[in-house]
Amino acid sequence: MQTGQLIKEIPGAFATQEGDDPQIILLPEGQYQLYGRGITPEMYAIGVVQGITNSVVMRVITGTTTVGQSYQYTIELPSESSSLIALKAEQFDQQIEGSGRAWVTQTKLTGYTGTAYLSALPDTGKIFTTTANSPELRYTINFSSTGTYYVWLRGYAPNAAGDSLYFGLNNQPVTILTGFALVLFGGSDEQDAVLEQTWVNDGSDWLNLNPPTAPPARTYPSMVAAENTIYLFGGNDGENYYHDLWQYTNGNWQEMSIDEGASTPSARTLTALAYDASHARLLLFGGQSITGTALADIWTFDLVGDKWLELRATPDVAWPAARWGHTLTYDIDTQQLWLVGGTADDETFMTDGWTYQDSWQKVGDLSVQAYHQVIYDFTNHALLFFGNEQTGWLR
Image (cartoon, rainbow, N blue to C red; front, side):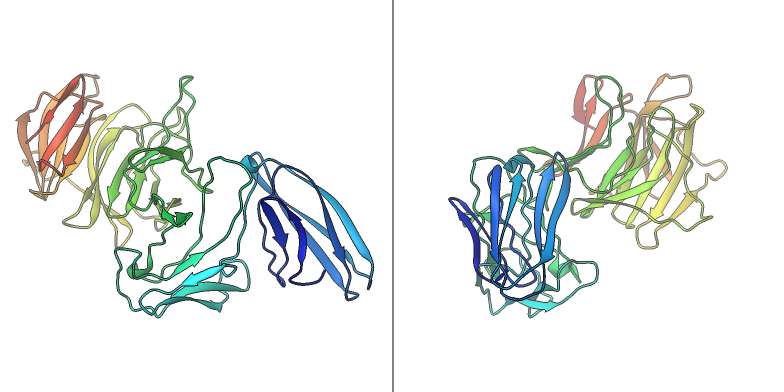
């Protein structure tokens, strides 16, 4: 095929070949003929990306060219709703520099496809909170029909000053899921089938991410946000009880690697996990074991050393009773953890409350029972609870 020449043109879409990196533009559903003419006697390959349901299939047509001979191939593409647009980063149409910085082609980075990648240089290490000082790349993509399209980009940040990329459509900024408001995982449907879906909400719409890797399906896991990362622990699928720890960041799940033989919390469900910001650690209390027994142990997970440590009770020191279905919430103002409510072994609801800051202190009866939620209210600087047909502030 002759490099750089227009291969096929139709209203609203086109396809070209640029050296060894073909540019793939989404075509409307239908049947197409690809034409080419040999200019040298060598091997050629024509790749066609097709989306079939949720899978992606790459069809490749190969052969050997003969000088002057014409070729014609027929392909059939599915509708846009199940197709894929694939663009190499370096195939941009226009670049606009920002504050003396520009996207520069670099040599290949291990783990990424293609022969090169782009880097915004010079890397000053400065964090920009707006796009005004950032270099911009523009790509032209023609959609032949109206619909909802999702843009995915793979990037790498060597430090905290390079961890943001912004998208726009038709020169207008769009909402980015870097500052997501909510992340939802798992649960069960109306037929009690356990789920492994990951949903995010940016404050207006829900989006099912379908990440390539995710925790096994489960109900009643415990999740907490720590800085820009979501952590998930435990839960059950009706047969198996879990004690794995997962982290979610930038749209991907990854199971935390724990040293073989190291102490870890036992498998459990309906536990409570909190982030202790003053010590950069996670705290886990109680839950229900696989035998149905309520637990009263407390564990910390060091986010720097990736290590679990059990904090054992001291004789004659106050300690909350075993329970499940409770909450554990960090109070930013007092730098204390609040444990509220839960269910005892005999399945009676507990209404006591406790604070933890290196030791437990009972705060009395809070009239909050079990299977509720408690969050820190940044506006009112208070702890807000909801559940059991009640809503109110704990302090």
